[in-house]
Image (tube, rainbow, N blue to C red; front, side):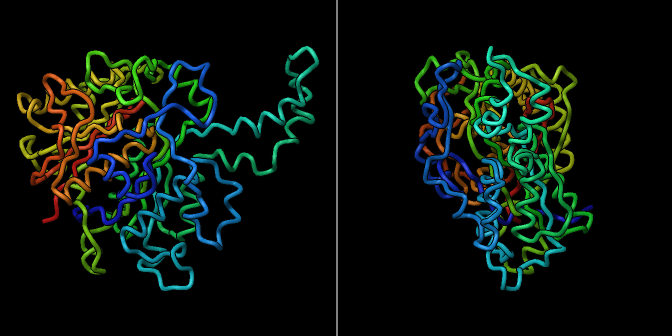
Length: 434
């Protein structure tokens, strides 16, 4: 398990667009994608904001011609994953069946795996609603007997295939002909980082040379959105969109949901060198813990987050002084921010006020199961370029939330933290190429 593993391709998908370039440009310019919700009428919800992809996003642009018939059974989450996979593969300069089905693949199909984080996908309301309305009585009540006998028959035969979380990995692996180990992880905001850790271990044990890894999710569905409102995780929207999310601030009252996520090409360093690939960053260590708490609460455990950080440091065989920057969850949810802040203070002590933070939720929204892959992609880009994006919003007392302008600095190790709704905590350390 001593084989070294790194990131050779990054394919984030955010409301700024597909790929690292639009995301990185927006971050350097200090722009936010958070705006008033357009995909459905949110006037009855407490939060009016989200970070949504615009109408220019078309999944056909990211699916090979020979696979486009499958688009009809792709929900939004699957579409995001297909775009992320193609962006990551192209960024890594790989040839797969989706890039060119007649060309020799860069990596033998049996030697490339796929681990993707996914959410618990809500059924499309218009699709299921048209079937359910046929089982409503004249007085408006719902007839379960009729639904069982006839109503359900009005659903399209393949409707469930759009809503199974493992279908993200299914479509990606089929389109790109990835025949190595495959898995789906559904652990909310920690899903992508857990997928990365799984990919690292798959490669270290010799079961693959490379894996597509990360996560994608869109909760821009009235049912999914309503659940987050009821859980008390979203901001009330009393401020303008540019200041909707205030991580670690006293005035913070919740996060904003974002569409997206991304996939990364995770590959053994030896294989990257052998094929002449590009190494963004090495995966130095990954720590995973579980908060013992009621999973429905918005709370988080500082002790459990601290444990994840210390596990990652131990695996990387480095001390806290070797961390040059941190990309925390920084959600704007007060209880989660408080626990994350306390964990950083516990590990880094007085240095907590001096280690630069890169806060992404104010720019991209919380991409839920895909958010960790956005964080990891940005961390890899920070290491590659030696640049930290400017902060959005005001500074925070006791934490170094960045500077008004982009900062150039040599980055040895960057810590990425995820704190999930389900209580899973992850800490991943990426290191510069050496």
